[in-house]
Length: 284
Ligand code: DGL
Image 1 (cartoon, rainbow, N blue to C red):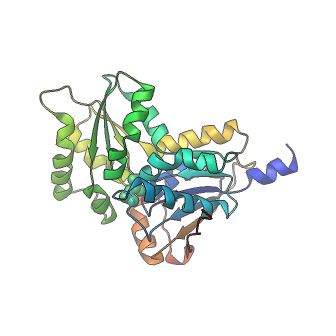
Image 2 (spheres, protein in one colour):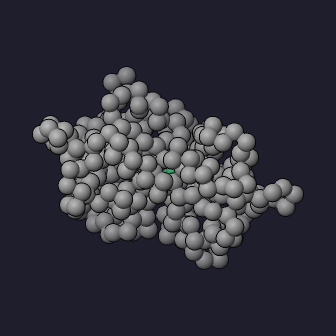
Image 3 (cartoon, rainbow, N blue to C red):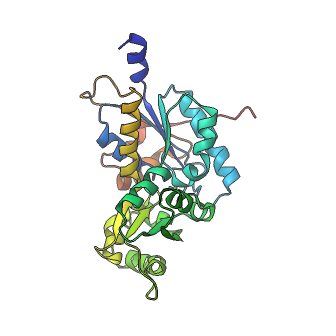
């Protein structure tokens, strides 16, 4: 391997999200590729993306990508489902030589592989469901699939409050998930957790839906897809046994980010480790 290729492969992987929830994706990537350096950007000044228009989310995603490209990343992961749903192709056009991965395609693919009956549920934010990107991705891969999509707007706030179990959460889950298990139609056998925050509610969701429904965690499937992508392009860090470093960037509220991070990330984040940045302006 040439020195240049080695130097390029030592660069960090950039991961961005609307806020703190994307740490579920960062966590999965860090477990899958512990030797990689990671730069995480949470656009905490503008969260939530899940209620914004596709035009605004696309602009935010372009700015977040630019901030990471300016920090010399070798690959980009759009951890935010809402942003992945509108911006993957846009960013691939802007950075044609950069490996870029969103969470929608890997999640949709895993659900098609996991489902026996072809009845697949998708839960996500309002914008992700309204945009139809997950539904389209599932139907592209498995045209006969019957897709049941449900926006679960309250789940994000509950997860950020750390309410990942308990009676109140179960009542809310039942209210939202009830429509996926209608008594007059075959129920789903697979459910895509199509939002960064939902993996932390996995146990509670499994309790409500029962063990016959497989849960597809798009954080895990994205980490696996990233590993495959970097392996194929020869861009894995040349020393996989090293301990990779993680850098955290936010656009607002370093202390809150560090505090709430504990719900989504398996290792503690200290406020002093989190850097406040200005999001770069786009040229056009
Ligand atoms: N990160 C968002 C997603 O995965 C959830 C939070 C938000 O609405 O910004 O869709």
